Length: 494
Ligand code: NDP
Image 1 (cartoon, rainbow, N blue to C red):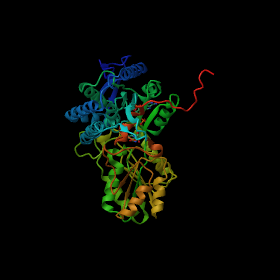
Image 2 (image 1 turned 120 degrees about the horizontal axis):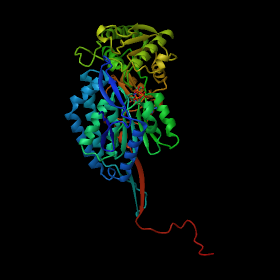
Image 3 (image 1 turned 90 degrees about the horizontal axis):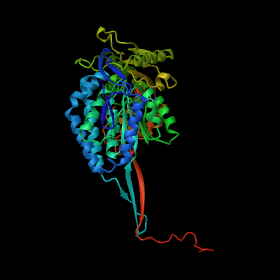
């Protein structure tokens, strides 16, 4: 019996007994078999979450008590880090070491929100009246659907689950059907830590089936979603009827600007990492290189050489530097994207095809690819490939670099390289993206907010704001010396 749905404090099989095999992107072997929920299962999970929230079983806990629970989950995650990383590596095809870094980040996320919950959240407002006490208090938002992608499966879910728990929300988690194993492991730890029944629920299955009730049921107060722009738009449309709160972390097509006065060696090395880490399956990947004309040839030549040297391999290949794409359909999408770029006039300098290494024959390996001579009118510059594809554009002036960096519907992240700190600061300020790295690309910390401008999303995860997404704000005005308002005259019984 496969019982990997967690609903109302119990592990259950799907109501129709349905299961789903999870395949390794490295060699297509079956790495797990999990339950595949029906819509009836989703409704049961929403019912459980709603009932637990309305009962007050968790909302009655203080912030400090909920913080202690989240800190305990962090301890348990740390205890099981290697085992969870192995599951995540199996599902995503990424190297074990990368998966271990990711689960360490999950632990850090839980610790951050546990610490944040201990801060004072309520505040007094001076309303200028001695007889009035005015307080702003924060309360749990309600029932939330938490939907995550496959690229950093547990980390993206952790950014939602940890603040939801600290806030006192009840929730239903849905990881991508491609990468469910680490979410199952997390739910076991949430149970072990002593979370009240019905607060945390796990649903598994394809978004096209189980997603509909999660994003449209009137009992869901908020949807927090990380994934693609199109799915984000579907979720926005579903939110209209009930004016549901949304937190959306969507895609990015992130500019990486290198000025001629940069530390070129460091910039090149970071540009390679920014574009090809996790084979480009990173929302903040720096896949849009924008380089000053005078150094274009030198920079691009070096990046092409380095891209051609990147060693691809599966989870247990100790020599590998990055892994496969997540699925066959994703590999086909990346291939078409590159073909379209070439048809539009881009120059293919390296890659542009599936790996021909016999060791990769059964996996979804695509070679690191560089497309030169690109411009902002091209599909490959405007759209996200979510694969190992770097496009190259050139600029002459600072204003041109800024204009190019902002010429996108997305606004998730960007980088700027220059040894002129005043210029770098001007460009960082002018770029309309949620995170800007100066002379760096990629690092983040749970203490700092993460999220997008424009079509990269709504709201922020992490930082302090990441907890605020799961809280309602209430103003309580208490008159300690009641008197008549005197606004309307009382004319007796006339
Ligand atoms: P998708 O939008 O395809 O899927 C994301 C999640 O939504 C999955 O769990 C998926 O389920 C689910 N889903 C799909 N359709 C629906 C629906 N109609 N209703 C409810 N849920 C649904 O994105 P990917 O998983 O392909 O992830 C890649 C995208 O995520 C990229 O665009 C990337 O930029 C973005 N992303 C953004 C991040 C950020 O911080 N801004 C971080 C990481 C990724 P299932 O897969 O089971 O079908």
